Length: 476
Image (cartoon, rainbow, N blue to C red):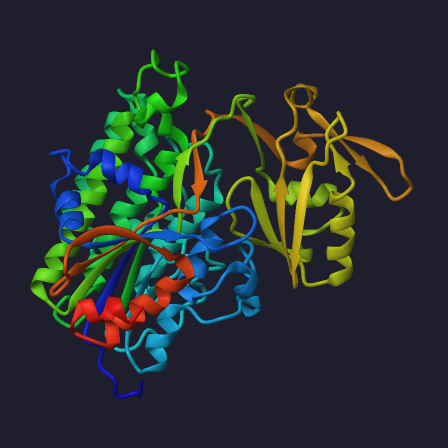
């Protein structure tokens, strides 16, 4: 391919994180979601298969999808990892090297932003190292977004939206393309939370509603980027917490008699997905060159946690945590990560080494290792393990210093909190979804298996090699 190549299809990739076929099959025929049904009834379908070793995490499986290689090849392990350590090339860079524009919106491990080309845009993921976006007027939204993610994601609170960055977001709302209907929807949500407490669980979905408004304002259907993405985690987060409210039959008698109050939370999340698909299919109608792809790099399924104790630990005060192990604020830079992990950059190798040694010598009162530490160049990913219930009640842990002496440290003194949370009832599985919709696509619900690492080549061939979709699939 040369720099003069013009794609035959403009790819719009909807990254609907971790949605499995089981969820689609349960709700596809529900009359409340007509556009989900329309999309899948008219799509060519696949079952994606994650190829990564170790525990499956979306910040690892999505790079495998984009880069066409496994985690052992691309080397991406953690949120906050230095991008200079990543190997391989994400799909959007292939388009840029051909002189084609891109539109990136929330794709995981996409920071830092780079020139998206004429008519393009670039909004990194919500774990970015800073708020930089292209165009720059998106940055107040991204700054607010990053501030929300930096708070404990395990506990949704009514005051979660209140922050010093909120005023900047509100001032920039009209230019961002945030619609009047979205503002009304947010106002209604905040009011209803006071009279219907379970509605607080819908709060995280509004991140997707806002971002989709922004995406639509940036995406010109008449002259779209050659390759665009939109990432959302809003369905995945509901599944993790409330799978038992959606599929109670999978847990025997355990939840059958309990009220399924969060079935409504999933219905709300699917209503938003239905709206996204309606809007996206309309874009295809406006411009038949647009091909719409729905994808997940893996899925979710029921998980049984019979010994779950109802608590989850978190390092909620990072300066206090680092300070108790002898670090000053000037010794490190906090990076964003997902609870129960934190991520920090520590340039000084000696400081970094001593912190690792100290964390590896921390134990619960019953003697179980408390932290897992991964070092990649100058960054550390620190995971706190939730100790046994008896250790939580003692409100302290053991640090063994270099002299072998055991020192008791309280959770509070180390900036560690124990949150009472519901047991998650769904977790990651290798099988996900890929479905292709657009002009010339022959609908076929075959759900043929395809390695997630092969999806990059499929999308490139779909974009460039032929206008005959049957031939494109044959080439695979």
